[in-house]
Image (cartoon, rainbow, N blue to C red; front, side, top):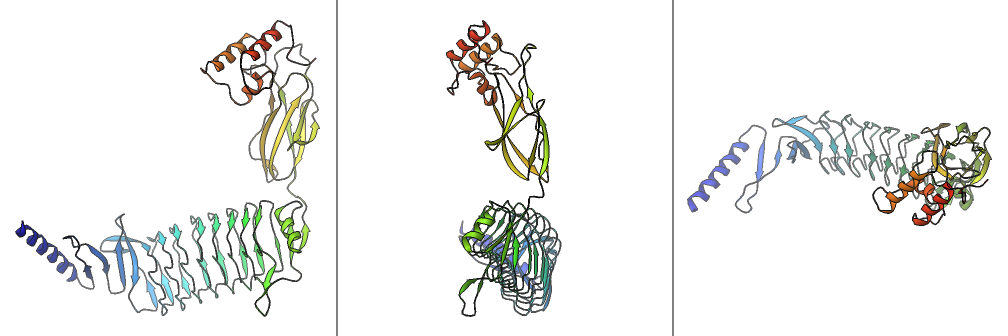
Length: 439
């Protein structure tokens, strides 16, 4: 057994010496539990770590060049990532070229590269970690790739020379302090896919004069645009439901105290979070007119097969109010972009029905054909007869449960349960002893 261990150790040592003998490359090994694992492989400029997926990531830059080009391959395997802190405070680097094989850039990967003026981010990059470019004081412009879903916390914090940034439509979140202290940034257009602008996201962007916030953003964090001393106004869409403390209209005075910016205005819609924030903070609010209102015509179907039944006109209410009478069972509603509860009803024996609809860009996002059924019509076939009794019996024995609107129609006494009493009421209706419907 001792002989086998010695031979195993000699074999491992031979492999290490062989790797070390390769030109420009050494292997570092450690011994633990009779094993000799290889940890990061070093070349003349980079230290690599082999990942579980069989690709390498750059784990450290050990070169001295000002202009750095990362290779796409190492030892015959793809280089797919830049590891956490790989170029951390490499203060002599002025530019970095990344290969198209790069998929991930780790946390603080290039943080503190104070002399770096440019870097390309390949189109295949899927994630960029927290503080990836923090304190890259001279970084001038960056184009982020389509497919990136968030700009992580502190990604470009204190990139003071950054004058422009292209944010792809795929981004959903702009994180905490993502662009804080980007004092050269003058204009930001936030894409339509973003829903969250995090705390301090653009804090102390003192050159920022123009910000576009799209409909779809729901929250703006504390101080998100705080101390943006050149920003005099901003328009907030109706989709925003949460605005944090001192998120808008606050700057620092010469003593460092936070004060309201004189003359700052917020434009938004009446009744919105923007108006509430402006009033709470004593900021001038400019109400916008809804220019996305649209006339939407709906035809209401009253489903009844009895030809002698006199069909009434239907009614519709919007969010429980503003009831409108239909004409020839057609109704035209004027609705601005948003989500609504439309409740349709009709006199006589029809069961009211509520639909949730969304209007976007002046149109319904889904087609709507409102349909009302008769009370007692458990199978929704337009008439009340013995088949409805059979249907209710199948529900009672749990063979085929009634759900949704069919349940509402079968629940003839309105007690929110279906049982023998509903069957009795339908039987009395069928034999014309007591009608379920009003005359």
